[in-house]
Length: 236
Image (cartoon, rainbow, N blue to C red; front, side, top):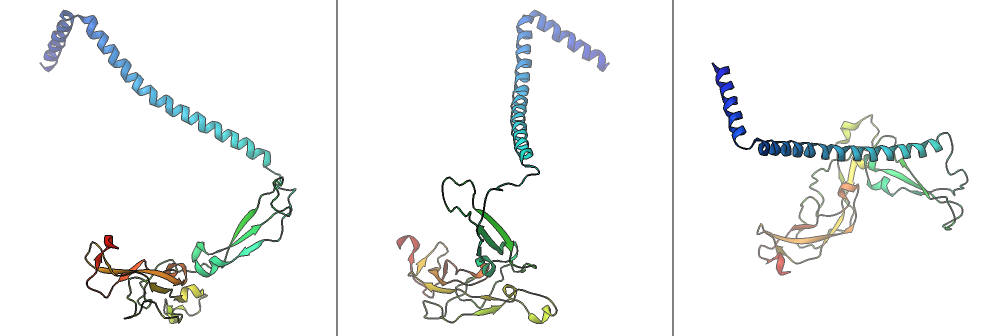
């Protein structure tokens, strides 16, 4: 019975279409199919065109690469002894601690030279220091939200070194000084008290002397003020 009713429905639909200008309906159906095909093929053609362009670029790069395979580049260049920069070794940890070697060509900065300057990086240590996590030190005023000493607008001139780990747990291991302790930066208050959206008074800080390693290099941008009454921030 369901199949018979389905066939009857199809017959009634065909009779209805035949009475209502079938060419008109067929034309609309063809336009709909054409629109679907266009909507499908346009993104495909754009995708293929982009793939062809990428393939052409890769082929061109491969041809350039093949011209240099087995040959030494810049064979005509003569470089001076490298300039060494070890600043990052004292401030950074892990993979960020490296020596920078800069090689300048012996012709100087003449425009006709085809020998560019070369830069090489070398790790500072065979075993990178494990000091990437910023500990919440409570001994450095002006860092990690710690108050400055009462009635002081600047931290003492004395250099504070704060232990980062228990040395007794590192027996028999080779460690870097950056893993053992941190040097607190010297901080100075340089603004009046001001109020923010949390209705708390703050004062702005600046770094007078940097600390190390990198995680403790600079002071916080602001510190809580001892004053309980202050002007809104926009009034400064």
